[in-house]
Amino acid sequence: LINEKPYKQWTEEDLRTLLNNDDFREGQFLDYKRTFNFLETSDKNQKAKAKSELRNDVCSFTNADGGDLIVGILEKNGLASNINPITIDNIDKFELELRNALLPIQTATPPVDFAFIHAGNGYVVVIHIEKGMLKPYITVEDQTTFRFFVRRGNRKEPMSYSEISNDFLHAASLATEIKRFRAERLSELMEDNSCMF
Image (cartoon, rainbow, N blue to C red; front, side):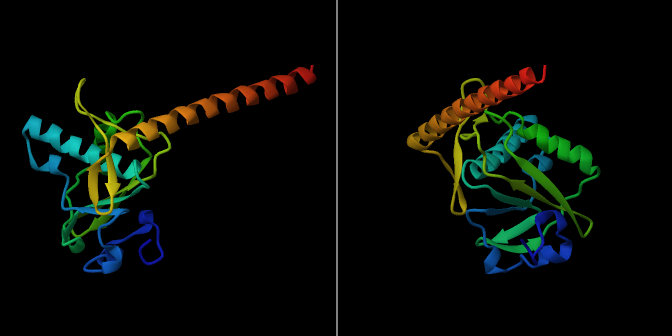
C-alpha cells in the first residue's frame, strides 16, 4: 500500500511517496526497473533476451512470496530516486505484449496483474505478482534450457536443487489432493442428483 491505497489506485502523486523513502526500499517484495529492456532494442536476439529476463524476474517473485515489480522508476542504492515514465501508445496492446512475453513460463503463467499509472508524459507500470500455488515456475529458454529463480531479499537468485525438488513434490501432492477433492465432490453431486429422480 502507498498512502493506504492498493496499487490499482495509485497516482503519480502516490508514486512520489516512493522517492528516497526507506520504507519503500527494494527488498523481498519490491523491485524497481528503469524501463523494459525489450523496448530499447530493435535487435531480435536482444529483444528475446530482454523478455527472458522479465520472465526470470516474474518467476523469482512467484516462486517466493510474490511482490511488485515497478517499471519506470530509477533507483539508487535500492531507493527509488526518480520517476522515469515509459511512452506507451496503446495500453491494451502493450499489456497483451507483456502477457505474451510471460506465456513461455511453465508450469503455467503465474498469477500476475498490471497497473498503468499515468505520470508526466508516459506511464509507470506496476506488475503485481502473487505467490504461485503451482511452483516451481520455470523460465523456458529453449527445448534444453530451463531456469529456476527465486527472490531472496532484494535479489533474484537461482533456486537450489532442494528448493526445486521440494516445490515439485509439493505441486504433485497438491495435484493429488485436487483430484481427490474433485472425485469426492463429483460423487456427492451424482448421489444428490440420483435422489432427485
